[in-house]
Length: 186
Image (cartoon, rainbow, N blue to C red; front, side):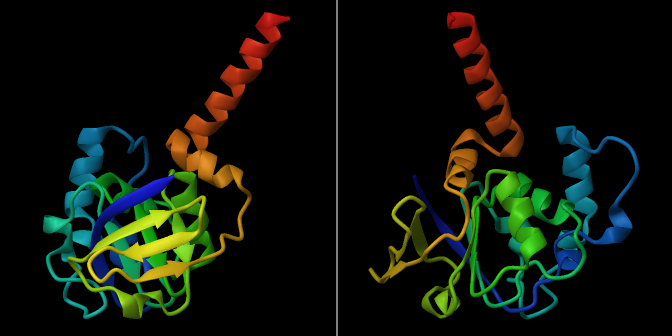
């Protein structure tokens, strides 16, 4: 599986509160697209760019298929899944960073979006460059400079299947459908 996209370069210590401020979490069902759109428009992400570790204008300019390349400690802070959901909803398809906080790491994978730790990778990319990530081969390529990097995913191989399915819930539904078809065939 290969992902290609435009790079957004983030600095170090990007906190989940910067991606989705806790003060905007409401009770009830926040999953409808219209509610989410309003949620994200009002979220802390709309205020980012005032710090040097988040590109100015990110929220307004990010588009479907973009990929974040960040320095160390991406996704630190609270465990709120809305930080990962906000990035996916805005179109970010992957995060590659020198290091990624474990809770954000798992939340993003569960949404069907790879989060890849590769120490030193942030020095190899700038905002606007093009990137290609091959999950099964374990390669990242800066398509702008031609440099290629290898990584090793320390996750179960079914995580890649989960990305291909669109996230944890669609993946489990697909497993159930396969199981149901196999039982019907007997």
